[in-house]
Length: 358
Ligand SMILES: C[S@@+](CC[C@H](N)C(=O)[O-])C[C@H]1O[C@@H](n2cnc3c(N)ncnc32)[C@H](O)[C@@H]1O
Image (cartoon, rainbow, N blue to C red; front, side, top):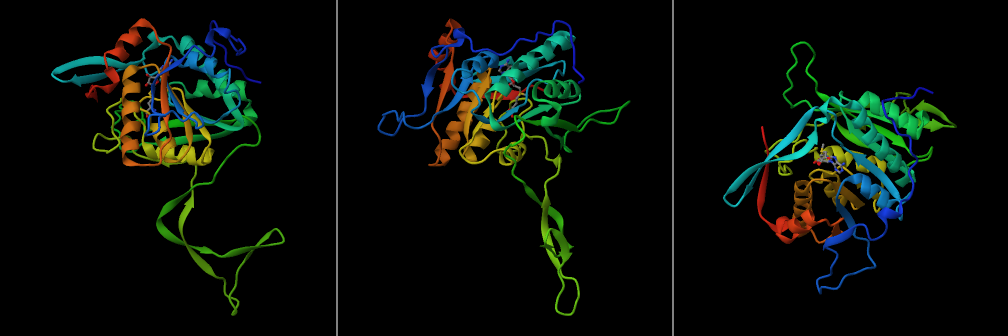
């Protein structure tokens, strides 16, 4: 078997650590209350973690082993850039970093970061689970080898190409880069996979066929002429033409690298069924979580950035206002002094606007 090696590759086996015990994360905001103010502990509450995901993954090993049906992650891509945002709060305008993807060209530490987490994802995935890892040309070739090593080459399901035709991309000595890849692997040989169909540009005439004892035969009319039917849709293949999010979209949040809802809708519909548990451990502006909510899936989300948690929380609460069918959710963190001050200052309830800095 081919294996990827890098300096200081640590091959540790994920283990349940007592450090991340049941008291490690505490909910500091709870949207699980009924109108009368009584918490309905019978019902599942979705979970949004404000933390480095490695801690959340170790914490979840205690009670979520083999329970998550679909994991989608859209991690930093090793792009060499840090993503900046402009924040407007009342009369104050200030800049901040949305998230770091610089790594000082240290590919080894980037790969180690993903390697450790992917091992834990595998532990948490249910037996019929699928993992979708979003990447681009910077590191997708390495990630595929890591997935082969952890999940096994025979668990490779797809390499989806997301073709974003509307993003300007310069390329003087190379072709303009206009796609990302989404690598899909399964936990076992038997996994949830729902076929999706998409509309054709033009309806097409297709021969009508029937299955006679395992052999496909053309259907003929009483005069012996073959019969046709008009098909308006087709099976979705592994090249997806979906635009990049634009500021004009109603779903736009201002978060750099926010993904299109349609992308997540396809992923979640293909790899899960209603009531299944979906997780995104690099959730950014919460696209995966909101789409899961709309498609009646349970979810767990996590991000290290308070601005990401701010946007995700707001987006979910705005959606809850629009609909009476929603799942309760709680926001959890390992409270240190800095986080405590932020929460107590009412940061999450403030009206702030977050814009991507050009
Ligand atoms: C590409 S963005 C995700 C965008 C998201 N898919 C969306 O549609 O908005 C990557 C996210 O990973 C988060 N992140 C990076 N390192 C992390 C870590 N160690 N733990 C948790 N989140 C992390 C960043 O804060 C950032 O929000």
